[in-house]
Image (cartoon, rainbow, N blue to C red; front, side):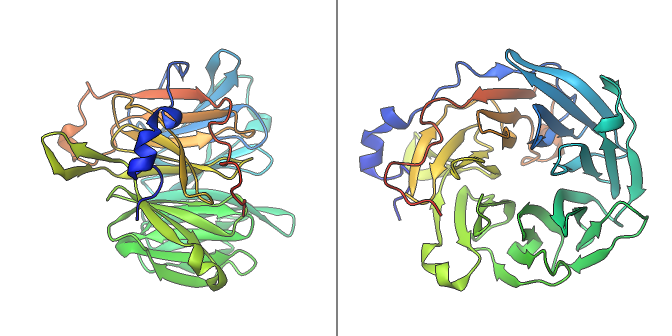
Length: 362
């Protein structure tokens, strides 16, 4: 299926879909090791960054870029993080199975802050997301111990546990929808009104290992990215099954052999909070903006010099942040001090992320 700019017709209009990064702002200082995840606050101009240097960095975004605001230490490599709905608290999970939480309402004006730490899982906490139920805040943690646990932060024990088929690799929440992607290509869908029950389980429509899942802004479905340079659009309900599709991305033609394509992992998928369009970013060092309803690539951007490991849109969608760092795809030996480590802010202007005219928003 020739979708999203892979057809010859799309190639002929490459000039209209080619974006540039000349106005992107580089943030400094940055972590000292690979950036695993980043997330903007849902209520304020703060950007949180999780790193393999065992620290979480919080930057304050301003008109000229970003300034380091706070930082806190974790016991292990920081693999996932998430903001509370009111933006007052930040939770992070690390490789030792610890859940680390800071309350920024009681934080100093800037500088080092101390996280409340609790042992949450027997193995690494890979994913952290907040949600609300009955007007109350909860934290969901997904782990390599094959569980998702729910915490109300009132006690040392989880208020609920969801057993998953395999190790949790990626997880996302939107409204009442929780999507959990595990090893062996299983994907669980959960209605958070019944958080300890799996609503539906499917095998990923992509043939190789899942790297990331990300929920649609309207919670009707989710996008899946894999190590094979493919992305899938998947709806939750069976009535929408005709809308499911997948497409190739983050692949490069071998200039010496037209029959060979280099395939790169899709490391990050982020949905625009206003328009419902989305981004993909990968090991090839590029990012792209897409309109899933029109099955159309909006913009593609040139290589940034290294793998893109994490992305996110600001609360109003005016800034797209992306991290350039080693993604471990070539093993420990290739994580050299010379590998690029950058945090960039891309101003979203004009029609970069706007749906294609005439496409139906779902």
